[in-house]
Image 1 (tube, rainbow, N blue to C red):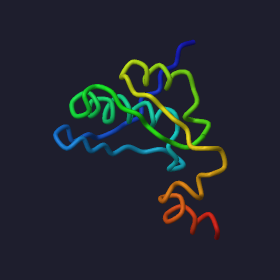
Image 2: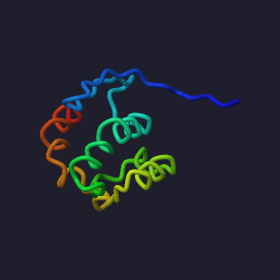
Image 3: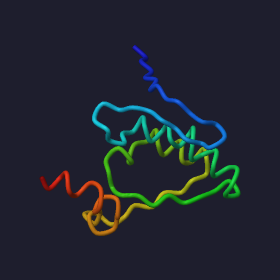
Length: 103
């Protein structure tokens, strides 16, 4: 049985703004794939000479073969932050995510 999941989204094609939904409000693998194919990949192709490097944390949803294939296809290299450093190296995690997690 081959099941394909399609996440609904709205896109403003000129501004590259995408609005979508996810049950738990986390960035999961389908969300990352959609972002790469709909938003970031075209941006890199048009504005960055067709290649880029994305630096991100070690989240499990980042380390799947389907995303590696997309990155290769759109010529984006990835680098991971050192493990267990998110709270020190990602400002959004410190400022936005930390207060709700604390309490």
